[in-house]
Amino acid sequence: MRRAADVLAERCDVQAVADRRRGRGALSNASGRFEPEARVSFDDGWDLDDALPPLRTHVQEEAARTIITRNDSPDISFDRSINPYRGCEHGCIYCYARPSHCYLGHSAGLDFETHLYAKPNAAALLEKELAAPGYRPATMALGTNTDPYQPIERERRITRSVLEVLERTGHPVGIVTKSALVVRDIDVLQRMAGRGLAKVALSVTTLDRHLARRMEPRASTPSRRLDALRQLSEAGIPTAVMVAPVIPALNDHEIEGILSAAKAVGAQQAGYVMLRLPLEVKELFREWLATEVPDRANRVLHLLQSMHGGRDYMAAFGVRGRGSGPYAVQVAQRFRLALRRLHLNEERMALRTDLFKAPVPVGGQLPLF
Image 1: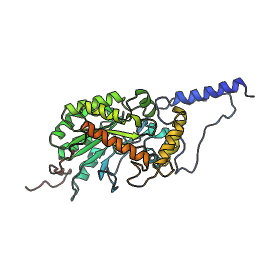
Image 2 (image 1 turned 180 degrees about the vertical axis):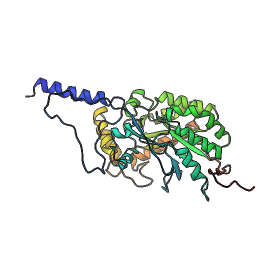
Image 3 (image 1 turned 90 degrees about the horizontal axis):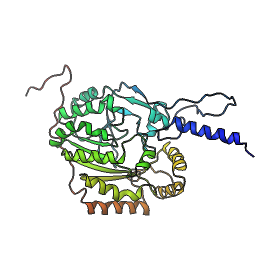
Image 4 (image 1 turned 135 degrees about the horizontal axis):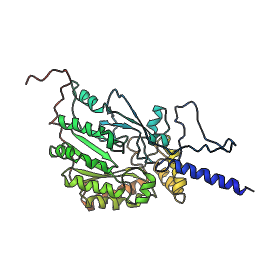
């Protein structure tokens, strides 16, 4: 029979871990898949107060060599993007970008939320790459891997500097974010939108403030995201709402409610993405489910696996973001019906590329005509 003292000690350990990761999404920090060693904490038997301090956000500056990332994925609507930051303080437990942190020698868990990298030379690199001979403009996506408006953008202002380069060169941009901080840049975005060069999408995962707090602890609240959509729309900036990700048996019942709320504040377009669990995200999300919503964990996983051939995730193009099978078809049909009822996606938000003027690099040759 277990001693009461042992049970009390375990509870204290659990509380100590909870206090340390307060405001974070992941529950653990397992070593990345490329690391030769795995480190775990354990009780060494010494009765010492060796509790670790609360996790703090650490930002390291990265001297990036390039800034525009290219892709040729057939199920993605853009072929180029910019990520001013690596890692994301929002801490969304379901974030498919978490495994990218393992390439830096970090964990996809708590490291992804607390060990961040900023690219202060992003704007200078962008000017250089836009000035390259033969560059042809197309919509530049911001927010494809990590959020360009995560909390550290308030002081760093790297995303703002990138937008200023894009505005100056007449280059089109599309933004996806979970942060109301985007309204800070309404001045730039409004001018660009007036020339057909900008559009903004806010990702709204749930309207339930408490669920949002647990899933995406440092992202803006759902009500603030909707208010950001309202302010952007009123400023004449084309807006969209992304129901992303749709999580079976957790937020799937909110699809119609999210679309209705977004339409009410001026959103013109909408899209959705099914939950994706690549690599380390599988175990992180399973751990979160078992802790935060244990009564629904099995149901969530069963429906998810029904869309991916019995597995947690299939990375095949066209399937990874939509799934397949009866449940996936049902969600797609519900989404289409809601779009029709709310008159969303009736006009295509195409951006202009004919206004682009390549910047002149420092020391470069000015055009003759």
